Structures are given as C-alpha cells and as structure tokens.
Image (cartoon, rainbow, N blue to C red; front, side, top):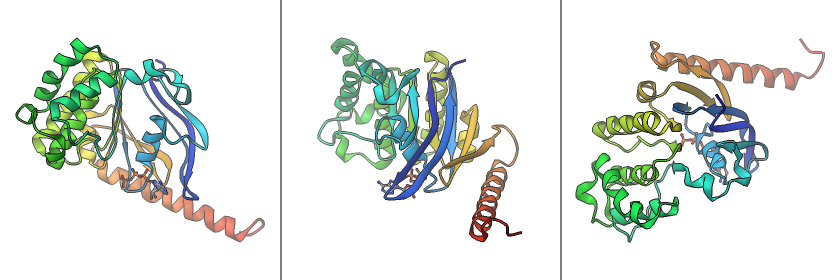
Length: 254
Ligand SMILES: Nc1ncnc2c1ncn2[C@@H]1O[C@H](COP(=O)(O)OP(=O)(O)OP(=O)(O)O)[C@@H](O)[C@H]1O
C-alpha cells in the first residue's frame, strides 16, 4: 500500500545545531502512526517540515504522493493539522473559527455553513460555540484546534500532541475521533505524544524519535511500553557515546 504521509531521510539543523538526522517514516491509508520521544527529540520540527515550513536541509516529505515542496491547494485541502499551540483567531467565535477552517480547506459556503455544528458537537464544544476563541481555557482551545483540523473530513492528519491539554474525557473523545477518521474517511494520521498508554490505545504503529533519529518501534498492545521505550533510548545513547569515543580516539586506537 503506498504511503499517504511520508518522510524520506529528512535532515535539518536549526540555529546551527542538528535537530533531525535522516528521518524516514510513513503512514498508510486508514492508519494511525504515533511518534513518541523525549522533549526536544525533534517531533514538532519533523511535523512542521511535513507541513511545508521549514524546508528540510536534505531529504523530503510527501503528502498523498505529492512532494511537500510542490504541494498545491488540492493537497492542502485534504490535510488537517494541529501543531503544539493550536491556532485560532482570538476575536472570532468558536463557530466562526471552525467555519473559517472549513472554508480555508476548500469547502463551499453551504457545506462550510453546516459543518461546524457536527465538529463542535463531537468535541463537546456546543456550549462554547458563540464564545470568542480568545476567552477559552487551554483544553477547550485544544478542542477547538481539533474541531478546525477535522471539520473538512481530511484524509491526512498531522497532529502534534493533540491530547496534552485535554481532560480524561477529552482524551477518550480524541481517540474515538481519530479512530473514526481512520474508519470512515480512510485517513492517514501522524500523531505525536508523550503518553505511551494513550498512543498504545489508538495507534497501529509507534515510532521512537530520539535526538533527531528514529531509533526503533514499539509494538502497541505489548506489556511495559515505558520500559521498552527507555531501553531503546538508553541503548541509542550508549551507542552514540561509543561512537563519539571512538571518533575522538581516531583511527588505529583500540
Ligand atoms: N527555531 C529554532 N531555532 C533553534 N533551535 C530550535 C528551533 N526550533 C526547535 N529547535 C530545537 O530543535 C530541537 C527539537 O525541537 P522540537 O520542538 O522539534 O522537539 P519536540 O520533540 O517536539 O519536543 P517537545 O516534546 O518538547 O515538544 C530542540 O532542541 C529545540 O530546542
């Protein structure tokens, strides 16, 4: 099955420091692929590159088979996204924000006029529909970001820590929405998280990103994912320090 969202050997430095080092991964149709990693591992940077900003130094991303660097309105209209701080126009109401997202993703006036109700209901935001986005709590702003990402029923989703400000009920709702998007629209979903239990319940694949490299996968449904995660991280760090030591010793040293 061809990948819907793909990163091919993406390398990127920011502020003179390496952030991503040859990252490759893919997400197939009707698949949730989770990216887990410690703070600063490079998850957000990878997702930003897949969304077109910034460009990688080397390697490339593609969306529905189209290189990110050449993606046009048709490709972007099939994508839903939410990065760390969910974007919303603070002076617009919650409903107006979701409507704007629907229009920006290419929905016609009529469809975009009716679409926000379902998106707001599914995220439990009905009672806030007429509130200005700037007055929302952090968790409700995240719900609004998700409603805006999902309103146009995208076939590709890139979501950076979508559950980090949600209450326990919100986390369950999020999981159901993403699984529904997979089932109903065949969506390919790349999602990052710090919460191993949460991703294990929703993802079909889990990749571990550490110091800008994919260092392995975790199998959802297996026991003690936390321990498996730290085993991989410690092994990668050990390998890195061995490599650094032998590079410092130079050729010919034991
Ligand atoms: N604009 C920038 N200039 C310089 N360094 C940056 C910039 N943006 C990110 N970085 C660095 O790149 C590294 C990766 O950051 P990134 O936000 O991608 O990690 P992350 O895995 O999403 O972390 P977190 O889990 O904390 O959100 C960090 O060391 C960060 O300081």
